[in-house]
Amino acid sequence: MTNDYRFSHRLKVRYSEIDGQKIVFNAHYLTYIDVAVTEYFQEGLKLELGESDFDFVLAKSTLEYKKSAHLNDWLTICCRMGKVGKTSMTMNCMITREGEEDPILLAEIIYVSYNAETNSSQPVPDFVRTRIESFENDSSFS
Image (cartoon, rainbow, N blue to C red):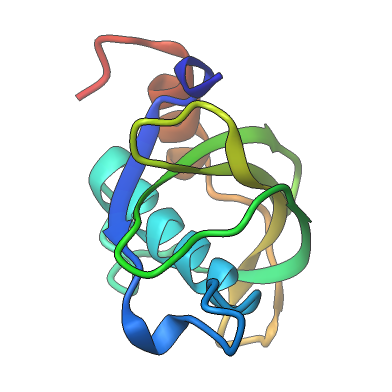
């Protein structure tokens, strides 16, 4: 299943992220995804966020919890861009525990291309669209 994803990011569950049941508190999964998505744009697409004509904001998140992560688990957060619309982008994410294929969590995250000056959505810039298409479809993208 992880073969369907071109990008992944690893992180370790810290003590402050677990709750009274000794599992990762649900809200932390969105933080894990946010970290991985940032790395997707910076490492995968080679975009300097905050230093270009492109920014994005979260519009919708749908999380499907399958299992629990625990203290000191190494997690792999896989990301792929499922769709790029006129102003929105749909990211699919999967979190797995190191050494396992079955997902802990599946997510669909919708982002909107954002113009901070006008405080409104804007079309996804062509250079971003081109980088996403190249990265997701071309194994020689670098």
